[in-house]
Length: 87
Figure 1 (cartoon, rainbow, N blue to C red):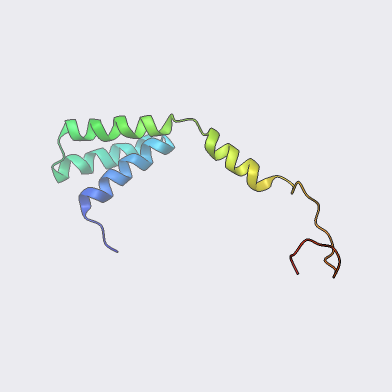
Figure 2 (tube, rainbow, N blue to C red):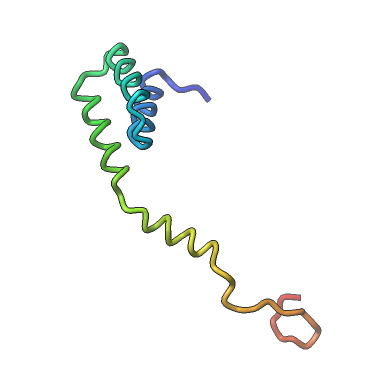
């Protein structure tokens, strides 16, 4: 898969904002200006990236908690008369 330069620079700006990587952000914004993105477009990318970065991570936390939680029902040995239907 190949991406055009505009998509790459938008992704670089977004990633730099998400990581709070100022040197990478400076480089990506400079490259965006060189590619012809307007200051307004760059500002919109920055605004959207900052909004996404500030979203609560409660859903991520909930999912990880779910994945790491111990099973509620203990597993058992299957036998001909256990009645679970999984054998």
